[in-house]
Image (cartoon, rainbow, N blue to C red):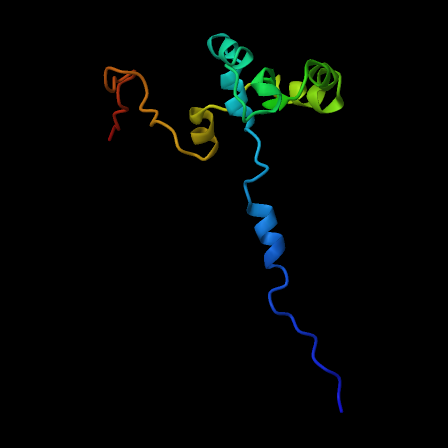
Amino acid sequence: MGRLRHKRNHHGIRDNYRKQRTRAYTRDLDQIQDDLKPENIDKKKHQEIDTDLPGLGQHYCVECARHFISEGHYSEHLKSKLHKRRLKKLEDEPYTQEEADRAAGISKADNGPKGGRALKTQDAVMED
């Protein structure tokens, strides 16, 4: 009797599922940049009491987009390495759609200055 063939029947499907799931998805940096604008930050800092959120939604870190159980846990988080890393990432300005289009090679046509074509010099005349 010979050796049995090693079966390779889609054992990696579970890993693909874990990679693509959005259960533990956090907010993107450009979304957080919008939250950090002065008109939005007050809404995030002073939220109404929500029984579904940790700490009734009263202890929220805007930069990391996380809720904390108590003020003590929130103050510990402010000293943590994860929070400091997020602050460093948020220092850079987010890319705009115009910059993304230019990087992809899509931009407005540059047709020169307005007013049409004007001759700067006369055409050369060939002599016989």
